[in-house]
Length: 257
Image (cartoon, rainbow, N blue to C red; front, side, top):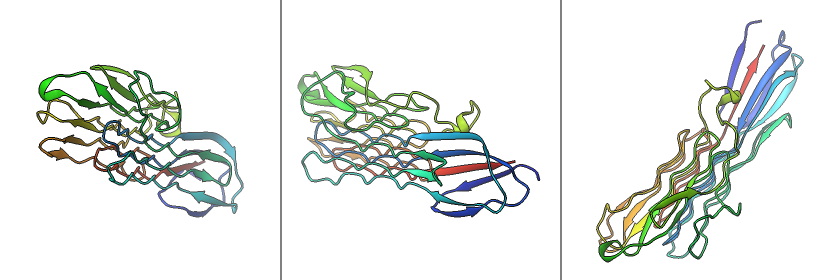
């Protein structure tokens, strides 16, 4: 039999056809939901990824496929509200990939918020922290960008970018291949400013399905809405002062030969 490629975008079962003896598997967990917070609305982490190559199979074997759902975005309630973690994706215990962590808020200024308590994932979510400013820019919160391809998100502090939430530290491309489709972008962080709209910028979602953070001016109430992680990419949801967005659902890939 020739090579057979299967893509699973929802949970279910699959029976291996006769004639195949090996399979490669790739799983992406669901992305974490974005945070809602006045000052530190981080994006959700992208779903973790996992790859198994050359696994022996027998025709007629039925496998259970679980595709993780994206985590819920935090509701807008004018208090710090955390996004929820994405769900795990797996194939009959052969390969399993955890969901990305939901975005959260950490009180107090810090140039390094890598505690692992929130927004880590296959690619880390972006974070927001207060920047120094004056006049129309005070206070100002610049959204950090979500990570991509297993990298860390960014956190902005005093107009400088630092490492934010942690990625898994290895590629999130399909089957771990340099040419594989990119999954699991981290969600971007939200931005808030009490002064002139557009003086700052929302964090952008990481490549591979990460949602963008929101942008709001608390003086004029002008805003750009955050966006959700893309479906079946494991992308993290964007964070926003006025409600975080959900993470994208995961995906499972199979290659039989």
